Image 1 (cartoon, rainbow, N blue to C red):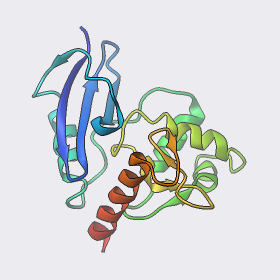
Image 2: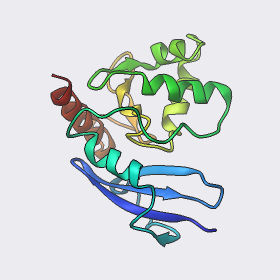
Image 3: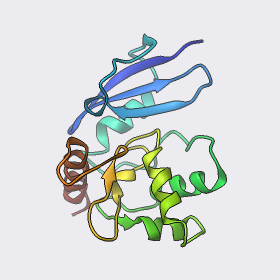
Length: 162
């Protein structure tokens, strides 16, 4: 089995939902990547995840239908803790590290968010720096496309939460 993928439209852009030969799931915004999808397109791939992604920025939805992937213990705890951040709210990297069991590991928590393979499903956009927005999708800067996307996602979530 190779990689299979599908495009999922959200209010903030297209998400590429993919499953590789090792059954690892990825969800990434296509606007933040220059390379085209690899593998074969499958419009019926992961229907529950696709429906969840389509709805998550329009209405309240339950927990993501896909578990966090295999990774180091701390990284998995960060991803799980990130999923516990309420819709429309944010937490700092330090607080996320504390939620994951090590309040002194803010940099490691940041690395977990930077390497999050499941945008929106594990809402790393809800994690911010103590002194500002931080980064998004591995990019840092005051006015990058990725940071504008992070702000837009949070704006939509705040409407849902109110």
